[in-house]
Amino acid sequence: MKRFVIAMLLVVMGLTNFAQAQRHRLSSGEPYDVFLSLKGQYFMTQDNFKDNYLWGAGGEFQIEFQYQEAKISWGFGLGYDRFQPKTMKRPYLPTKQLFVAQQVPVTLFCNYYILNERIKPYVGLGLGVVWGRYDYSFSNAENINEYYNREFEGQSGFRFGWIPRVGCMISLDHKNGFGIELGMQNYLKQDRLEKQTTFSAALQYTYIID
Image 1 (cartoon, rainbow, N blue to C red):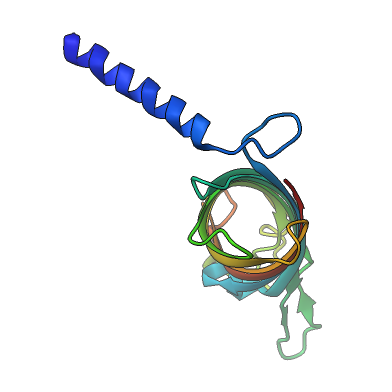
Image 2 (cartoon, rainbow, N blue to C red):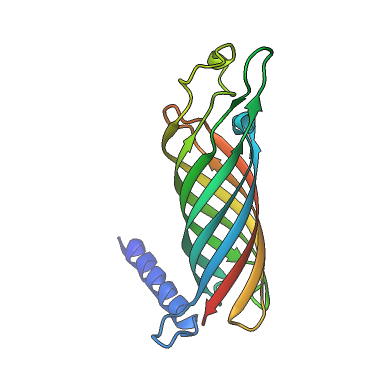
């Protein structure tokens, strides 16, 4: 019991020292900077998702809270993505085209900034949920010989996933920043929604509130 009390006191003291070490940067006293970011993304489809869709593009709005001295941050993002469908042509039959896939991802993420100067390289991990509507007609073996089978069209619902990423932001004047980011979106299979993997490349603009 005595060791437990001592351990708890050490944890409390550590958290207190951590809070005191942060410079109070905002006028209201919070010990962090706030990043407001707009991100444009290009997606490269992988695995079964590649059987149905060629590529994707989308945008995301992010709010991020960065503790400068600790070089860590957390935040959340809300996005909208569209994916270009594939087509199939068989002899004596009209061309079959899948419909455009649309999805809305919501992500909670944490970043670690390797450097925290004007150039800010970082690595991060996001956990998220995505709602989407897809057409899986070309990736199901059950559908391969049923050219007009619509059983796999219009699959929609929610899935959970994780997004590792690496990026770099350049702060021009401590108010405006521009950055690039590479990521890998991994969403799990859910009921009739297939597992979905994409690689992404993004450009972003960030307004910094310090």
